[in-house]
Image (cartoon, rainbow, N blue to C red; front, side):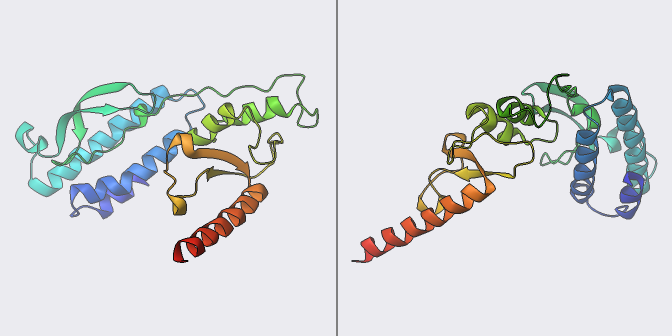
Length: 212
């Protein structure tokens, strides 16, 4: 797939190629981040580097150090775990648009289920917390699960493994609430519908008061 994308963007701007490749690389890396993939990630990054070097040759003739520096640059990237990495051959535009590398994705080991635990044991605290540890759980959801100790702040019930959950703004954006962590909460989808209806009613009431 990556080879095909590079071939399709043979004459496209570097930024356009990067924007097409990044979702593919990030998605694939995240999918396999739960297994021992470090060596594979490094090999893939090297293969892509070779394909991109050939891409530069097709655009500007035989590659030399000076020509490669028009597409590959020194740079520093910040990883999702907060750490920084210094790279000498980043496929990057002059304005900082850079290609993601497979080996920048941290390996997250899968957390095994306790031998004595089942989804039917009623231990919703364990299962809600485990849901926050799952590889596919978005970072924001995981933080809110931990903050709320596995409970929905609207109904007070624990989140079950099969529950549909949604991130909600405590103070709605329509009423001036900010999209920041302290203004977020995790709710069951059906309770969020109830809260949204109440928020809308409050917004209408406030508008009517202001118009009087």
